[in-house]
Image (tube, rainbow, N blue to C red; front, side, top):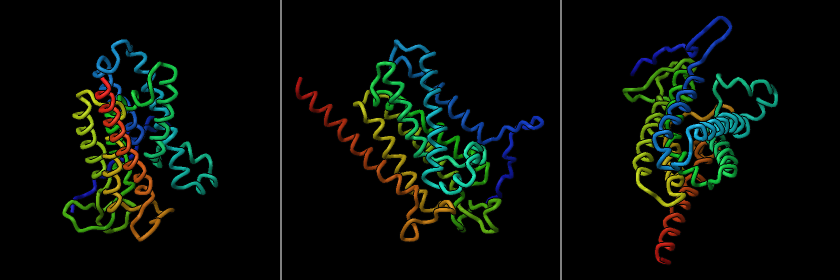
Length: 266
């Protein structure tokens, strides 16, 4: 068993002002995405300035934060937030939904593209390889907050989490960091280095994320207010990942078939 590192969730305290690690992880994710996007800006569109890129990153970040929070409220704990509406703004306490954040990003991307002469999937293909940076940083934030831990286990790397009882558990946040953060980033970054049909990068992101998240959900404890939805194993996270996987496969098939049809027509 490994000892859980007791890290204060508050990174910096200046009198009444407290800056939480969870919030800093979001800043790291957004900043890292902006830096990598800057490297690929000429490949994406040489006419774009860094100011326009900054605008895109800003609106995508708003989509992540607002969509992620509202998604958690709607998908995971609506009754609690109806009872205490002000709880919605306390994002430093955790409670963000990836799937809600994805919907927020999609809406922000569609809105930004309409105003800047880019199609929805042109922008989504550009954005997709950057998303794992934020996902990985967010999982580290979950780990520091000692939340979203896994099931009880006897694996050598198990940890006893605060508020998780006396039994050692899977550090599922670190599994998700490794899969959704590191592995997903390497896959998408390598795949997108060469020209791909429009929609293919977005489709690969959806497939890989959906599979990785579906797998980890088997060892992650579901939100207490929801529990398992069926069979003593099916979680809300898995339910939300199924349309991602199927939709991603559909996008990739469509992208390559369309490219083949266009090539045959020449």
